[in-house]
Length: 259
Image (cartoon, rainbow, N blue to C red; front, side, top):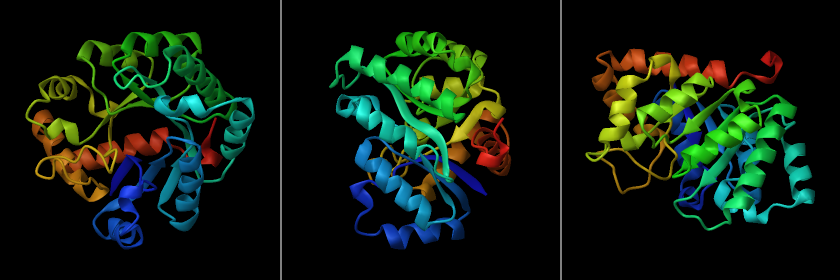
């Protein structure tokens, strides 16, 4: 079964057919989905989805582009949500200097606070980092994030940066971008990465793989990502699906398995 490590099924792009689409995932080989929140309202929606669907689990966190909404009272509420039985990660959190619509000092503050929160509640992290590799690494090291498991979602840096994250014990999320014609850098990273460091993800409804590029993405398109990884690595699609599922289960352990 395929493990979808990063989806946003609470997004409004799925409002018209969410309840029709989600039951189809299991029929098509998608065994588990981590639905990842981005702002405070999406935390609530994500928890509702996890409660409704047995195969959906939640990641609770505030995306860097939405950290401007945080304050101490809201952060306390966020921490409380981490105790949910189906909450398996803190995320997505991090830094985004591409859009840069929240002051960088604000992004850095709440990235560090959410890393510390993950350490406190003993959950892995899902990290968003765009055009901010050095600051991301510096904050992770400063917050001892090396001691907490996690994944660098939608990886977009060089293989040298990938090595730094791997040395900290982090996994790398690979999605539809790997199928894009202009994704040479990411394909080089995939070739370089050991298979036990890769997770499959969509980031749906965004970043649909070829041949659906530009359309709404969903977990049903993950086989196209697995096929491209298999081609790059010279292994079978079945091996890619099996290994990445094992990697994800190792990272997103059920609450009773946390150490």
